[in-house]
Image (cartoon, rainbow, N blue to C red):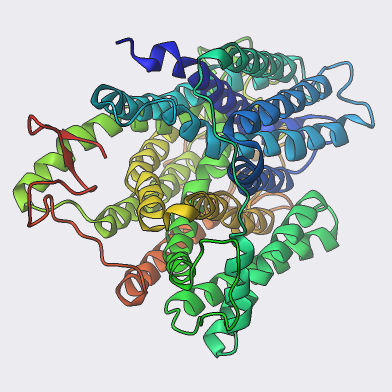
Length: 617
């Protein structure tokens, strides 16, 4: 029997590779494009727009899951929104054309392409492509059941293949041709390649239509509205009121973050993002305290017809909320340094391949390859060697709590390592050279590179990737295993929204508040000779070299380590809160036994085949 991975699912996997390639190519260069284009958006505001882009992409997962499960089915949802995605990439490519980028309509069209078309497309595709591919297999056939497990491994691999091509190749093309105030055609070439890949993915998905299993038409049943009624009718106690207020604040602060980030150049825009962050914190505290125990939720006095959602189902879903919030927010805030802080740090290091004025310059986003490499190399090692070795020794599966704790600590360690790297960079001289030879093409205009290789930024990226292996797949498994069957899509969509949208309602405002345009505390537009042997550096610094100055920061300059410290503090606080909540909430305690006491059936934590080999559940 031919493996459906290559006869059917390959058409689906192409969509995932192209989608991730496009997403990371645009997201990974968005900050640079907005800063280098004629709009000259400050890096802090550009970083906030990037956070909004990520937020909307995850928020639209709700729409994609809802439409697929209730109205369109997965095939039509993927096809429609992949086409919308392609249209968005064409809009972005058009506005990056060097002959058009200066037009007054270019920036609004670019933002519409990113924040509307692409974010809708990626959000609707994300929750459906994996499940549509897995649905092609007949799980009653033992052979196809094994092949289905192989599909999940290849799917996860394809995500990182797309990201690897993007960060290793396309993002570097984008910024390599920036010359002073001339944006060049690098961004245009990068986005055209991304658009071409997405167009090919749509055609590929269509080409496999006759091979896909026919989907049953979805039956519309009220689910979210029923849970809402349970919440509102029961919210008479203080905890019930806290929970309901927490839910009601979510659309408010997400809207404030979206509008405020776009208008961050104006004082009112900045104020809106700060209010957003405050409301987000209030909302999350209310949801955690309100749903830690859900005995305040009561049954309806009248029957709600046409739904299979019971009070027990509603309590079970709400009981998962505190852990989903604390894990996703606590991990993703230090993790989000990969999207802004680490690439910015790399851009002010030596990003050249070779030397001289014509040397090719890498984009700081290139260092995201460290995360991709960590996942591609780390997953098989951790899953096939480390986990089984530990489990054989302790005769129990490794608990989620243990994995979360190690993953959180690794994400915080990555930020701590970045602090040390930045401290070393500050003591390094600038790259010698005539004219603009030492000017970074992926940093803000006119910023000189420090004489320190950007490859040092791979270290925090790699550490973050290992932490990601221990947190993200585990929280997905938690959402899948604990949710009632009829609410799997709703719970998984909420999980993705918290990870990508709600966490960015904190990261985005923090970016505007504390993230600097220039990590060097001096005005780079002045002649560098003015800063030879600056006062404040000791005898260990050779005369005649140029160093970043210490002391008060001119406007737009600042200390990136402030961002890293805040990330660490938030991550550790959320981890501590999770360890308390996990002991007190309504969620069932995790069963870490490798086998059930009766019979010889393995648990989901560690599955063995007939030959005793451990395989992933």
